[in-house]
Length: 191
Image 1 (spheres, rainbow, N blue to C red):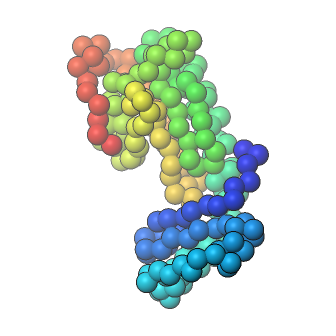
Image 2 (cartoon, helix red, strand yellow):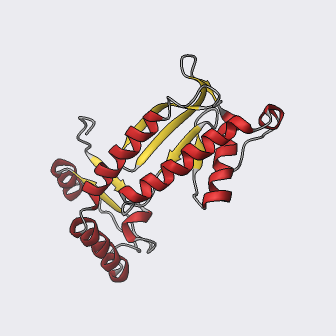
């Protein structure tokens, strides 16, 4: 989707759905270079239990069409996150840029759309409110800790996305009723 064809891709924890396994995917010319190059040996390579787990995960990804689901749900998330730029004027925080693809997204939380002023304290309060009132775990990232990271499991549905976005919208609107001194006194929430 980005016009990039990588020569090498590494896969880690999700490949085994909790069972320890990783993989390296390479294009043919890289694989052939290994055949002619130094010998590679790993004592953990080829564990049959981990390999069976990875194959089962790949079967579910294919059979349940999880890649298509990630694209569909990710598009809904991106559209509705972009709509959060247009909240009522009394709302002190907006969604600025939304980056990513599928179910791996980042949404900048800002106090001013033009200046892109990071809403660090607001972001921290939002994360805390989402977990406390809605049982939704989120995390923050970015240089100013104002990027809401959205990376749910591949089975995340349109209904799940709407529940998340409704909760996020409610909590963003709720910030308008907080004492500004509380916002100013807020430190970064560890996530």
